[in-house]
Image (tube, rainbow, N blue to C red; front, top):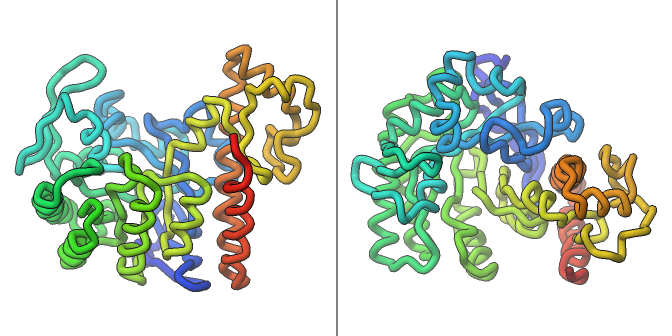
Length: 377
C-alpha cells in the first residue's frame, strides 16, 4: 500500500510536444501513463481472469458504478471486503459514476437538480442517484479513483441546453467533493469537463471545476455520436487547457488512432469497451491493421494472428483455429480474441511511453496512422 503522503501524487517524467509520460500514485499502486484501462463493467473484464490481466501488464481496470449498484449491490460488495477483494484484483480500480449509463437510458430516466431518477434495466424497479449517492456507492466499492456524477449531453444538443447542463454538472461535482473530502478512505476523485461541442462552454466548465479541489480531470461527452472531426476539434481545444500537474482522462474514446490523437494532445488515461467488444465480434487489432477473423480467407491460414505479438493467443494458435472457434461460436473464441486485443492496446500505450521518452512520438503516431488508414476491412 502507498504512503498516505504520496496519495494522488502525479509526476511528469518526460514530454514530447504535448505528449507526456507520467506516474500517478494510488492506494493500490503506481500507474504509468499514458495508460489504457480495460473495462470490467460488472467486476470482471469479460472472459478474462485477473491472472490474464497481470500477464498483459494491465495496471488499472475500470468498474461500473451503475451496474455494480444494481447487481450484486454495492453494500453487499462492501460487506465482502470491497471490490478489490471481491474480484481478487490487487491493482488500482477506477469507477465511473453511472452518469453515462443513465444518459443512455433516456426513455426511462428523469434528471432534476437533486439527481437522476431511473428504472433498472433488469426488472424495471425505481432508483435514484444523487451526487452523494453516486459517491457513497463508490465508497462502498472501495475504488482508487472515483468519478463525479455528471450529465453526459447528447451530440446535437442546443447551446442553451448544453450551458444549463454544464452548470448542473458543476453543482453536482461540488456536492460530490463535499460528500467525500480530499484524501478520505484513500480514494481520489476526478472532475468531468462537459460543455458539449461548444469551445467556450468547455472552457467555462473547466474554469468552474478548477475551483473545486480534484486530484484529476476528465473529458466527458465525447464519442456520443459525433463525427471524428468534431471529436478532435473539441479534444484539441480542451485537453491542453487541463491542469498540467494533474492526470487527464479521456472517457470512453478508444480506437487505436483515437488514443494516439489523445496522447498527442496531452491526455494520460483512456478507457473503452471497443477492444473487448470487437474481440467478441471477431474484429482483431494487429501490428498490420484490423483483421476480421470470420472471413473465409483465414480458413486454412496457419500463421499466427500477429507475428509481432507475444500474447498467449499469438504464441499458441493459428488464424485458422481462431476462425474455427469464432464461426463455431465456441466460448474460447471470446477469451482468446479478448486476450489479444487488450494486449495490443496495452502494448500500444507502452510503445507510446517509450516513444515519448525517446522524443520519437510523432514517428510512432505516423506509423500507426499508415497502418490503420491504409488497410480497410
